[in-house]
Image (cartoon, rainbow, N blue to C red; front, side):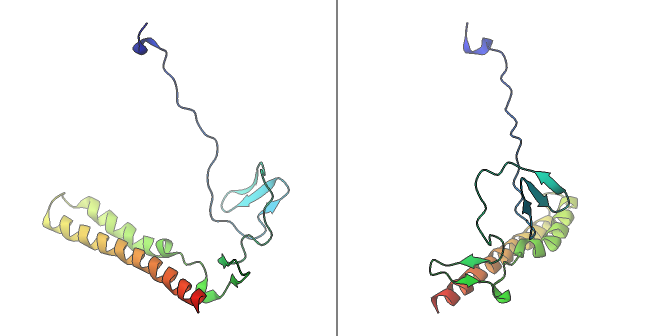
Length: 131
């Protein structure tokens, strides 16, 4: 019997997902409150540390960065609307045409702008910590 004669093996389905956007007061007992879904039962594998949503950054010296200027910025969420519009325009263009190439460059520049904004935030935060 060769390797090809075995029954098909089906892929295992994992019944979990990641939900990074959490509100305040999200965990009560064995339930978690998820935005747009509501209260959902969960299996809590380890205790949640005190104050886990309150500040953007905690240093080893115990300093908490909570200044509104250093709030966790959502660069992609804010820039996503323009990106969505540009990509929608791109799919209507004929691939390889001059207008398609021009739009590709605009999309690349917008991605670069978002990446630079993220880097800028991190550099400013690092500068603040060094001061």
